Length: 71
Image 1 (spheres, one colour):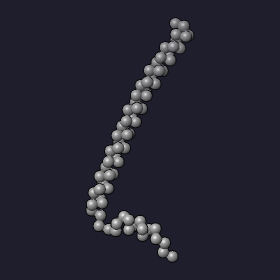
Image 2 (cartoon, helix red, strand yellow; image 1 turned 180 degrees about the horizontal axis):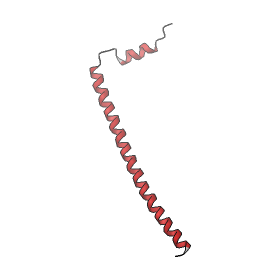
Image 3 (cartoon, one colour; image 1 turned 90 degrees about the horizontal axis):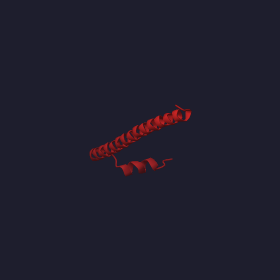
Image 4 (tube, helix red, strand yellow; image 1 turned 45 degrees about the horizontal axis):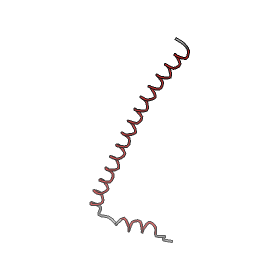
């Protein structure tokens, strides 16, 4: 086998391995995206539950009180 043929075969194997790695990375990105979307959805649902049960000062009043400067 010539050096050129050996090099070509080695490059072909490397290309195949890189394609496999790319597929794995893309798969991980999809899972991360799904995980992030689920976390966001869960946060929004928890926020709604907490808001319904909240008995304290309103959000607007709380922010207003924090911004008031009392010297």
